[in-house]
View 1 (cartoon, rainbow, N blue to C red):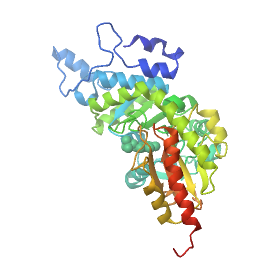
View 2 (spheres, helix red, strand yellow):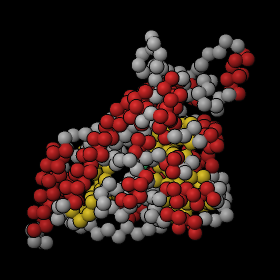
View 3 (cartoon, rainbow, N blue to C red):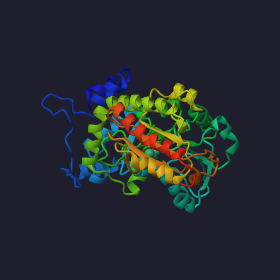
View 4 (tube, rainbow, N blue to C red):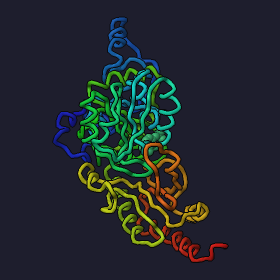
Length: 405
Ligand SMILES: *Cc1c(COP(=O)(O)O)cnc(C)c1O
């Protein structure tokens, strides 16, 4: 174990992200070596049997599928950052979202889920979890302690994501977690947008944090990985469920995630700065109906964001004044520095046309105009602004043309 672990409580997240999970010994390389392994060898039957008995314990080396020391070291680093007891690395962010559902929900149970949930996870719930006899109720992400009215005797779990990764509602996590605790329901929160560097849901009363390390932790759009972090009361069941599902992560992907972790703080600081700067500028433009960014005072949940978060990442949305899909398509296709495609959290800027209305059932999406999601990457902010300005300028020209054209 790294000597840094012992003092980790006193160190700041930037320092921890640099030091955690490293061998930290003289004569050892700076970084943990990559273990590519299926078979692990033992010297005696007794040792092999002991390893088998301990296979769901943290850090136990037994067989490749249960993890290797490099993966354990990375998991420990994430646990320290999130303030949890243990972390389980899983093959994708979606696998992380699904793991607590599979581990804790039984036929007849009821789960409350934020209406702003990452859409593929919503599909897993309605197409897979619900099919197995679990009742799913979506709730308004702005419900706060009002969520108590939705509790039933069989409510076993509350699933949060804050902010929503398309619509950016910030949830009152302490209020929701307190109600859930009172009703003995497990709380799960997707923390992909902020990462532990800007937001620690466990410290706000949440039981289990899930996240797509695919985004900011990997940070270079070249690997996929999910993380599930929990306290000691939930860790073992999650670890077991991950094994029952056969989840196993590539040590090379974990290596990339561990490498990403080293520069996470510096990258996030820049994503924050560039994102806020672009958002503030976009807010002044007449062609933009609304900017949806939790760090702007105009955001309806800005006060909660300020209370619970220490920064913003690079992902936010704008609503164009234009209401025709054709204009929105022309706008995003005119951008040169913002690539078009799914995911985000890498070094590069991205753009996507969103359609929140079709993925909601508990709340209505009444926004007039088309939602465009932007990811502010690590390019120079002036270049990004110029690229947006050029595309928006043409949008303005289109507005001034007669409607028939
Ligand atoms: C991308 C994302 C996921 C899923 O991550 P993958 O690694 O793409 O499976 C889960 N939650 C949120 C909020 C995401 O943005």
